[in-house]
Length: 79
Image 1 (tube, rainbow, N blue to C red):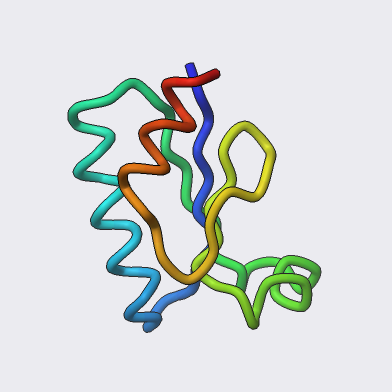
Image 2 (cartoon, rainbow, N blue to C red):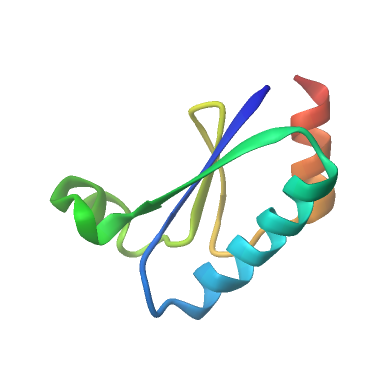
C-alpha cells in the first residue's frame, strides 16, 4: 500500500484544502495517509515553510501548494 504524507501547519487554508482532498480520496482508493505538522520539528519547518502543503508519495515529493487529483491517482495506480 502506498504511503502518502502531507506536511502542513495549522491555520494554513491551502493545507486544509489539500487535506480534505486527500481524505476524500482515501475513502475510495487504497493508500495510507499521514499528516505531519511542520511546527513540531524545526528541521521540517525550515525545509518546508515556504512550500506547504507538501505531499510525498512513498517518500518522494509529489506536490506542493496544490493537489491535482488526476495526477495523484495516476501516480498511486502506476506504482
